[in-house]
Image 1 (cartoon, rainbow, N blue to C red):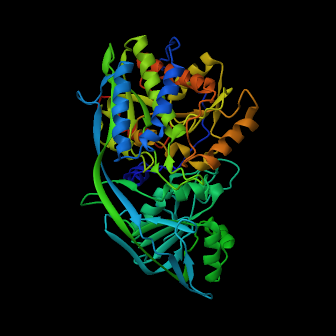
Image 2: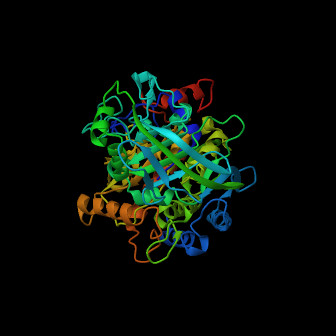
Length: 567
């Protein structure tokens, strides 16, 4: 589950972020874009194996920020970046400090629902609900807070849509549907992007909007299809230590408690209120929906252990030979969940082999290959960020405090979780048609004899759930490409099964572990695409922009208006 920072909502809405995961035309070729030919890279499969295995070993304890696992991870990455031929990327240092707060809830009382036509409900933490506090308070208490069903919890003035219209939410708890009102559409047409999730559908937005409304609590109703992951992911990700950006004195208002309940639990709550969840959900899809007070109250309490600490982004670079002050970015997150809910065999280390030891290993392998090829015209930056799993915190901190100015950053590539499933005929493009970077991607695909397939699950909103988004929302064009699902062995049926099996059985759990029998051929093919794209951008003299109509184009245009971006 890819969390976004608290700052993301405001910045995104100010950028009029309303059309997400567009279909786009990936073949459109604007004139004037220089897409040079480049030779293939010398990429090491052994490097991918070695780095992935080491980072995901139990020795690294799941790579949680602020732990001994971070210390080992950062030291290992510095060693590997130096070995690959990089130089320190932050004014002589390999790291950028990222101030974080870790809040660990404990001693959870049941979530007690009182009122309506039945006996009080006592809901167990973990099985029925999970909850955390974003506030840096030693204790959290929600006492007899009135429950209000607010549909999708959206306030979008530009769409004439306000699920909080006429409400005073002070002291109350919002009960919110996951995703957005267009979920279930068959096309990309609709006020909220059709079947493509908008940012209004992300849980981060829902909690932040509830806070802006003055709510005491916010509870999202989990449903596997619109959430795009099962309850096991929610329970694992929202239990144990939670890292957040340090809020500071002028932080936006937040609820006391943000949580989730199982759909079956929500159905019981609605029944106790004399309501029907399916009927309320249908009504909430319609413009003009009015929130429904449920006549129930919610209470719970828990203690919080609070720790402030510095985590670190790791930055290496290969200086350019002709235009060293122009930068091509490569990003991947080094962190994972640390220790988490144990598997039946007692294993409680979330090793994060696929997510995202593979992506971090790719940074090392790409750096190695680019160093062997020699300096490109532009500088190549390799950024391993922290706290992605806590809400893209490391990427967002870098993008808000860039070592290399964003108006001198040409664009970039993000790598998150390579599926080790053998070769595919395609790659999955998340957010296709968004920028002129597609021209570089298409040229690389043609060189490899492969094709681009739009994201098969635009309703999941994946473009807004990984580290590149921190750059994109600030105007820097970024590509996010996943492995393909049209596998050479078994086609799309086999590819879909690989994705399903990983999501249900290993994603964000203790069994995302390195397997020495993995077939790396597909990963290496994907890595060659990333190498070619990065090299072409570094050898080009063009500055690719977002396509007309994209929500991030205005930000990039404004940044470039005074002369940077290749003027």
